[in-house]
Image (cartoon, rainbow, N blue to C red; front, side):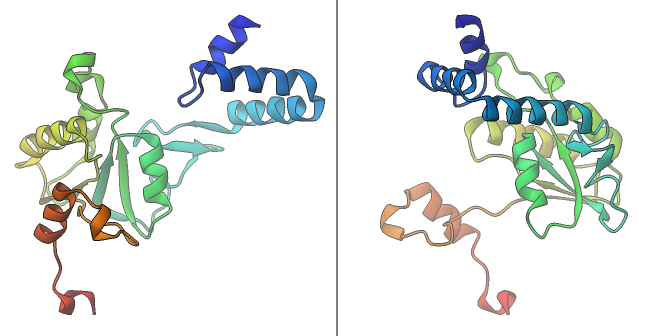
Length: 192
C-alpha cells in the first residue's frame, strides 16, 4: 500500500492525504478501478509524444504538425505540454514547440536539458517565433536566452502580451502587472 501511495504522490498536486484517498477509492470501488484501468490502457495505446514539436499525438496524429492549414511561418514556443494544450484551445493557427521545461540553474536545468536544439532545427529565416513562456523568473531567463540566440535565425521574435486579465479589478492587481498592462497597451483603433 505504501509503495502505491508513494507512486500516486509523484503526480503533481497530489500529497499524502490525497494519495491515500485515491488508493482507498480505487480499492473499494470496482467501477472506478475498471474505469482507471481502461483510461490508462487507452493512454498507453492511443497517445504518444510528437517527435517534432513535443506536443502529444493521438493515434499517431499531431494537431499542430499534421494539420496543413496551419500557418507554417509562425511558431509559438511554450514551456510545458499543458501550456501547448492551452494554446491549442485558443484561436492560434500556427505551429507549436514545447521545450519540456525552463532554464533553472539552481535545479541544474540547463538549456541543453530542454528541447532547444530541436527548436533550432525547425526554424527558418521566414518565421515569426512567438515566445509564450511563463511570467516567472525561470520563464524570463528562458525567454531572454532564446531571444538572444534567435535574433539572426528568424524574421521576427515576439512575446505574448502581459497585463490585466479579463475580469481583473485594478485594486487587486500588483504593480508589476499594472506596469506591464500600461506598457503593452493597444490603441482603441487597433481593436476595431
